[in-house]
Length: 188
Image 1 (cartoon, one colour):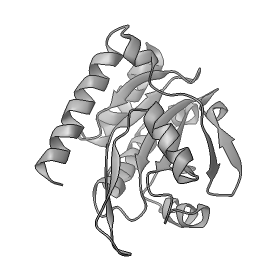
Image 2 (image 1 turned 180 degrees about the vertical axis):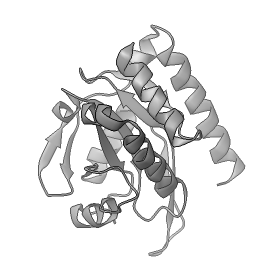
Image 3 (image 1 turned 135 degrees about the horizontal axis):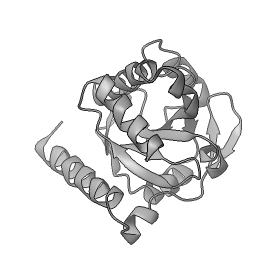
């Protein structure tokens, strides 16, 4: 990851953390309506985020490092949650809809290292741009040809059961600490 991208991610994470600790209007501006398709070909919208806590992550299946590392950490955190894991769902939204078809998402998310039951979402480039904008997610294609990569924000958004943003999860800490962040938010 280049230095510019690291700086963008650090500033974004700090901004999200500040929003989570305050009643800032920006905190309530994170999220919004969307219409996407899950890995089984089912239409999904923002109602998906209602009724359970949600860890929402934007990435892509051809990501060589950050995405699988983050999803693996979330998978371990899910196990560390024990019975409380029933109260949370994990949602992966692609920033690479050209390659991340429902079938590709299904194959990728079937990794036993990732959170069990993760819901993968894809859609048209316009639909992905809409949800990315609603969550203040930066992404852009880097390179050409079939082996291009995607620079993107790497923040896990913890959403409340009412669909509102609760806090960013720090996934740079060990999985038991990620689980503790989730538990703390659930008990607040």
